[in-house]
Length: 235
Ligand code: CTP
Ligand code: CA
Image (cartoon, rainbow, N blue to C red):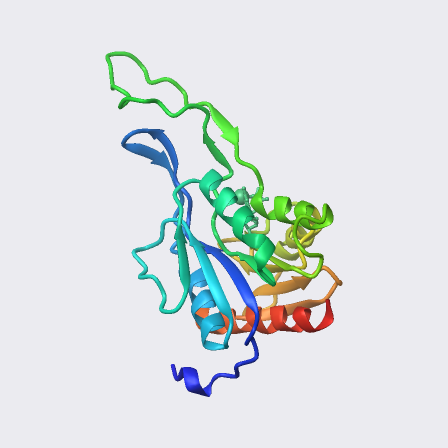
C-alpha cells in the first residue's frame, strides 16, 4: 500500500468505526462470544485514515489484530460497553460505520464466582436481549441527539433459505434498521439464486443497490468508503 497515492477525499471528515466481536460474561472465566475477526472494520479504519479522515475505532475482541496507526482506539468488552462508547462518541462524527459483530443476547446474570460442575445435570443459561446499537443511533438522529447529516452504516451477513434469498432478507433488514447504507455479505449455503461472483451488495436507503464483487477486505473497505463519501456530498 502506498498511502501517498490515495486520494485525500476524506480530509476533514470524522469517522467512527466499530469492529470485532463482543463477549458477554457468564461467570469470571466464561463468556458468550462470536467468531468475528475484526478484519473488515479495521481495514475500513485504516483506509479512512489514509484517505485523510480522523478515525476513532471502537473495538471488541479480534483475531489478535494490532491497533492501526493514527487511529484513536477505544477497546470494549461487552455489547453494553460498545453501546455506551459508540453513543458517547457518535455526536462528534460525520459517519458511524457499525462493522462490529454485536452479541444479540447476554447471559441474564453474571455469576460472581465460577460455576461449579457439580454432580447433577447443568442449569440452562437464561438470556437477555442486548440493545440494538445501530437502531439506537438511527433513533438518536431522529430525536436530534446526533446531527441529522450524520451518515449511519450497518453491516449484515446473510444466508438465503427456502423463504427468501439474501437480497430479500437484506432489504428487510435495511428497512428495519433505518440506516443510510447496509453492507451485505452473502455467506454460507443458499447462494444458488445469486449471480456468480457477487459476494454481496451495498444497499442504500434511497433504494440504490450495487453488487460487491468478491475481493479483498481492503477492496471492500474502499467500496464502502466511496459510498459513504458519496453520501457526505448528498446528505
Ligand atoms: N448491531 C448493533 N447492535 C446489536 C446487534 C447488531 O448495532 N445489538 C448492528 C451490527 O453491528 C450490524 C447490524 O446491526 O451493523 C446488523 O447486525 P445483524 O446481526 O445482521 O442484525 P440483527 O438485527 O441482529 O439481526 P439477526 O442477527 O437476527 O440477523
Ligand atoms: Ca445479530
